[in-house]
Amino acid sequence: MATNIPIWPGTSSFAAGQTPFGFYDTDNDFTSSADNTAIWAARRLGYPLTDIELQDINFYTCFEEAVSEYGSQVNTFNIRDNMVNLFGASTGSNLTQQKVSANLGGLIELAEEYGTEAGSGGNVTYYTGSLAMSANQQIYDLNDSGIVSLESGTAGTTDIEIKRIYHEAPPAITRFHDPMLGTGLGSMGMIDSFGWGAYSPGVSFMMMPMYADVLRMQGIEFNDQIRKSAYSFELVNDRLKVFPIPNGAQFTKIWFDYIVKSDRSNPLKGKTGTISDFSNVPYLNMIYTTINDVGKQWIRKYCLALCKEMLGYIRGKYSALPIPNAEITLNGADLIAAAQTEKEGLITELKEILDTMSRQSQLERKQAESDALQNQMNKIPLKIYIG
Image (cartoon, rainbow, N blue to C red):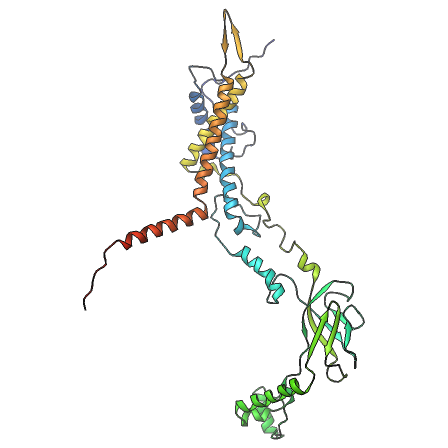
């Protein structure tokens, strides 16, 4: 016994739950537009002059898909246009139909990598370590945990890279000889009140001109550079060679800054829950009510193309129907071909419109307007002023 399946009767009444996903079922504008769009699409397909082998839920399905397709195309464009400004942002905020401001986050993040190597910031932690010196020993192994102390762990167990070694001559200011240094409590109290109590030539700061201190410091530093072995070092792999040879009294430790190599090569330096690629950019379904009339007209046209395609597949089940003394040929193939052409045309048109709205296109248009205005202004005669 054949089942009598009802087809489009000419009217419908939308209720929540009649769309496959229910994305927009609570949007009053969508619910009121669903029946109007169904009536419009049915009439554009030939109703009531010809039967339309669809039900109301078929029209609602096409309408929901059309809205989702429009939102998908717009959101895809926005992701592509704003991606450079979205890396590292939180995935918890809905960006749909939100203004995304340009920022330098991506460039600064790249600059941080250079800052790490230059020692001027960056996103890799600098640790402090020390090396215990021994008298008359010039060469040291940085993997020797007996003499090397690391902030991040034990020497020899972690691959590190030395970024800076603090091995310099003692400051000249600490080696002044001041024959006029006072011993009275009054003068020493005055020196301390100015913050000079820790310096050897405290009285000189009050009695001698500034250039005298500079000349004496230069004399001490030049003496060290010319007459003594310079304070320097040679670092090759894990082997540190220091100059001059320690005598046990000059210095007992060398301090250095270093990084852990695995920290620098770690690609996951950012926080979790942030935008990393196209797949987790938080663009969600649009609110149908907020879509302007231009977008809604595109949605109606795309819905009609989907309905035409669906009707074509239904009618294409049988290429012809027999009737007494004749045969009716159905137009399923024609409907499918026309629907696919219309869908492709609508998608292409929307993409072209969106491309003209990109940041780059807008900047190029501003540049063209500026050039045209400049050319126009150049043709205006200038006044001649006679003084």
